[in-house]
Image (cartoon, rainbow, N blue to C red; front, side):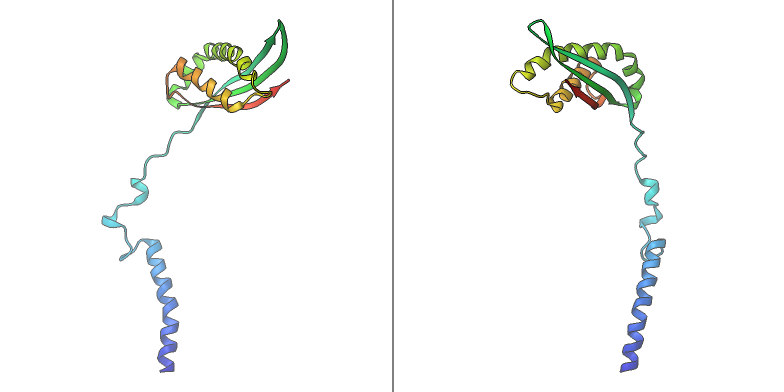
Length: 149
């Protein structure tokens, strides 16, 4: 009885190792169905992201005919790789619309608060991109740096 128990106890780890090896190698009974390779059926990798550097956007905040604050944002756009060239060609118009929109929006935004909320500014810049280039061309507006003085 003791010998039989000893033999069974020593064969269990060997059987586990054999089953694990068969599963790792994809041998029967652990083989994938119909021999289809899972890596071959996986979706093709997504194209790498494309970025367009907008550069610095300086926004003076004017009250009573004098500059009371100045904002400087460094902006980069995450764009659809197929549309990168079109976005780069539209860059002067984008920069102009960014500045025009922020010149109008920031003073109203600062009426009720002391500091600029970057999340709201980012949403405004995304709206400008969607209005100018169409929805879905710009995936995200990245504010790389921000300075307020």
